[in-house]
Image 1: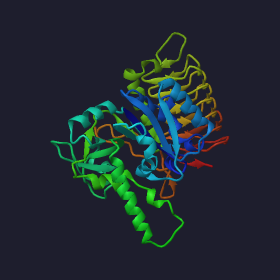
Image 2: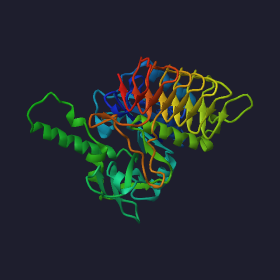
Image 3: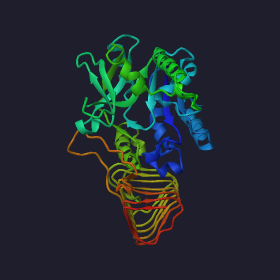
Image 4: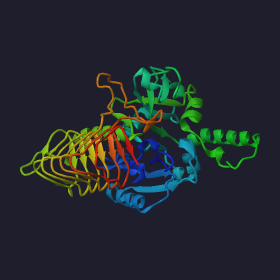
Length: 422
C-alpha cells in the first residue's frame, strides 16, 4: 500500500505570487485550465496501489478548498484529506506532526510532493528505481540537471555516478557544488520519521539551553532539505533519481505562464481532449490552447500558442491572445491584444487595448536552464516581467499596459509601463 503527501504551504507564503494569491490560495490557481494542485493529485492517483492522498498546510479550511477536495475525490476515486498545521512547520515538521495519519494502515512507502512545482511526476519510475537501488529502506529524491549558475538557487546533490547514492547535499550553496538539483519530490518509507524525530529531540534539547521565549513550537519546525538530507547524505540511505522530463518551480506569476505551457504540451499525451482545435465557426487556434467549455469566443479571434481560457470568459471579434492565462469571467473586447500576461478574474480589457508583458522564459539556448522566479520588487523597483491584472480590473479602450501589475478593483484610463498600480 502507498500514500502520498502534498505540502501546500499557507497564506504567509507565496509573496512572489502576488497579487494572484490575494484572490485564491496559490495551490488552487489554475494552470493549463485546472488548479495547480490537481496535476499533483492526478499523478498520485495513477500510481498502482495508491490508497490515500494527504494535503498538509496551514491554510484555513474554506468553501473553495473543501469544494476542490470533494470534486477531486469524486473524479479520481481516492481518499483525499486536508490536515491543517497549527503553524508553519517546514517541509519536515509538517509530515512529522502528522506521522500517525501518514503511517495509519501501514503503507510500505509514501511520496512527498511540494505543491509549487510543475512536473511530469515520474512517480512509478521512482518506485522502480528504489527497488533497484540501495537498501529496501532507502529514500529517493527526484533530481534534474540545471546550469552551473542557476544550480546555486536550489538544493544541490553530489551523487555516486555508479550507484546514484547521494554523497553530499547542500541547500542553496554560495558557490558551485553540483548541477544536479532537488526537484522537491521524494519517496520515503516510515523509517524517515526516526531521522526527523532525532532532529526534533535535538531541537528540544537546544531550546532548553536557550532563554525562554514564546516560540514554544519551534522544535517542530524542521526542514527536510537542510536538517534531514544534509545529515543523511553519504550514509547509504539517500539516493537520487534523475529525470529527463520537464520540471519547473511555480514561485512567481511569470513561472505560472511557463508551467501552463509545459502542461499544455503534456496534454498531447495525457489529455488530448483538453486541447482546442480549429473547427468551422470557431476561433483560429495556433499551437497548444485550453478553452473551458463555458467560454464564449468570437470566431474571428486568434488564440495561441500556449493560452489557457477559463470559465465564463468572453472574447470579442479580432482579439489576439498568446502566451497568457485568462481567468474566469474576464471580458476581452473587440480587437484587443493580450501577450505574455495574466488577466484576472472578472476583469475587462477594452476595445483596441494592448496588454503586454515580457516573457520570463528560460534561456532557449541552454538545455539545462531553469526559469528565474523573480520577486515583485528588486531594490525598491518593480521588476519588469509579465503583466498581471488583478480581480475586477477594467482597462479602457485603446489603453496600453506594459510590464505592470494592476491590483484589484481599478479602472484605468491611461498607459502604464513598469509600474504597480495600487
